[in-house]
View 1: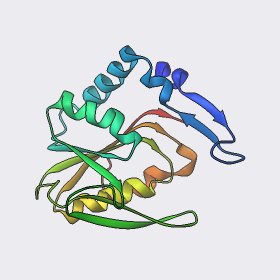
View 2: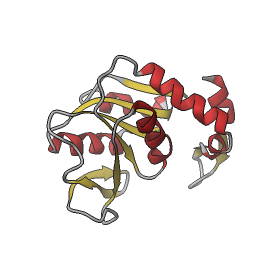
View 3: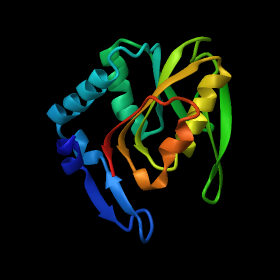
Length: 173
């Protein structure tokens, strides 16, 4: 989707020197484009049985919730540790320097549910893989992953293929 690619703002040296950050916030200023993005995801997942969509904090909430509404399925927030008010299950995962932990409510996924995991960007795949583990811990199946942007050179797709080969990214760089 060239229109999406062209709307993404490139920010050099953010959050640190040498990084070219892909800022999706300009997509949020254009309601028509936002609607087209949601419609494109719906089209690409036509025929895939989904019982819920899990969005990863925080930018995964933006299109993930809209997509869940459009598809008529529940939305499951996956958040950083300590941010959810109810009983949670958690997965710790490795970062470049150290570890992080994400959580979801322990009653968010029903056993056997087919869940799509959504985030704004696929880089190394670590956070999305941790989200997949959360879904599996509750007896759910990872039916698919969806991303607005994928950074091919970081090979995150290779990490996620063990959970689902149904991986859709609207923009691949």
